[in-house]
Amino acid sequence: MERIPILRMGRFLLVSIQVDMHDQLALTLQDDLTSRIVSDRARGVLIDISSLDVVDSFIGRMIGNIAAMSRVLDAQTVVVGMQPAVAITLVELGLVLEGVRTALNVEKGMALLQDATE
Amino acid sequence: MKSKMLADLIRNNEHAILEDWLVEQQKSLTRSRDKISDSELRNESTSFLKAVVDGLQSGEVDTATGAWKAAYTELEKIATTRARKGFSPTETATFVLSAKQPIFARLAQELGSKPADLVAETWTATAVLDKLGLAATEIYQRSREEVIMRQQRELLELSTPVVELWDDILALPLIGTLDSNRTQVVMESLLQKIVESGASIAIIDITGVPTVDTLVAQHLMKTVAAARLMGADCIISGIRPQIAQTIVHLGVDLTAVTTKASLADAFRVALSRTGASISGKGAAKKEGTNAAAA
Image 1 (cartoon, each protein chain N blue to C red):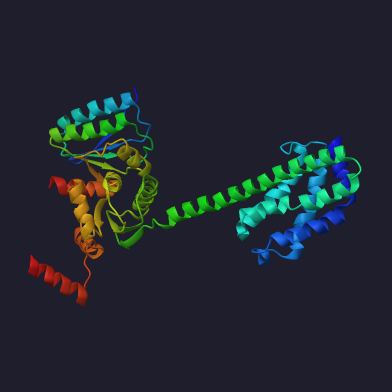
Image 2 (cartoon, rainbow over the protein chains, first blue to last red):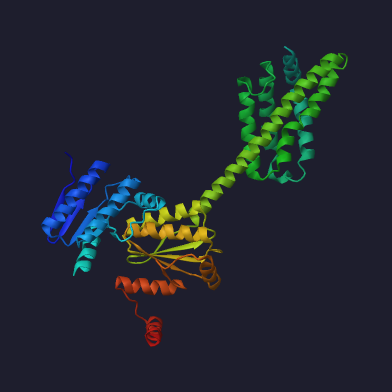
């Protein structure tokens, strides 16, 4: 089955979504990520969505949920690299991902995670 | 075919009709006389009259058919240039309609002895010329509308510049009323610029926005939310006293956004957030007063 790889970088987990996100894939990612946060004792999660150019309300909510779940497991979440069109779509859908940190690119996102977990 | 008779008549008297028609046109063109030269007028009239004769030659009175295509193309050219040059709709329609008088005069001359034919041919000429006259007005109006649409688009683009104030700091000076269309353009250009420049702070300056109602506030909040999703913080500046009052009276919640009275204040906040500073007499003095106030 198709899976989105979760990479470990020190205390952080790195997820880069490079394929079209469909609903099952998002659910699998949610399962995988929560178990990895627990097993790796991760302090932060960085989700790179720079290759994602289409989102719907389900995927938008999924991203919000993943962030909320990570927070419960005491890991900070940063969503990075959102495309302008995706940002506009999410805002129009009324999904402003409150409580999710955002950054323009992976570099800035990493810096944000370092600051937040120190 | 009846209308062929008319076509032949016009062709045989083409020169005389053209001269009379030009005189008629000169008479009607009092106000816009200097906008078109005599030779231009003559060229336009000659080619249009030829196209009309060709149309009549086909025997079709219905000007929507293929035979009239050449006449319409000529008319389109003429009406469009006239609209651009600032002729009035009446003057544009009169170009066509003033051909009636010379044509009718020839008809009366040639067919004076056959009243039935005269009436029939006059009717044909009237029907055709009226249709062409209306078409001229329509083309004129369409090309004016195109001009308005283009200007609207240009205004939309001109009025939403995104400027880079400093490394990592963008400013978006908004001027004019914010409606949904403009918000969309503003949002798109801001987000695009954030991607290009990698900025982390955007200052939205609303000094030039005349009124802020709930809808405008909502549009602003949308823009702020979209920028935040891209990882950029927004500061709203240039809030005038009256606007501050309106915002509170309307119950608009702006607590989620940093707001500043002036662009200078917002810029200072942005600089301190990015860890940059400006040194110099004026800057130091301001810093000093701020420190004293704190």
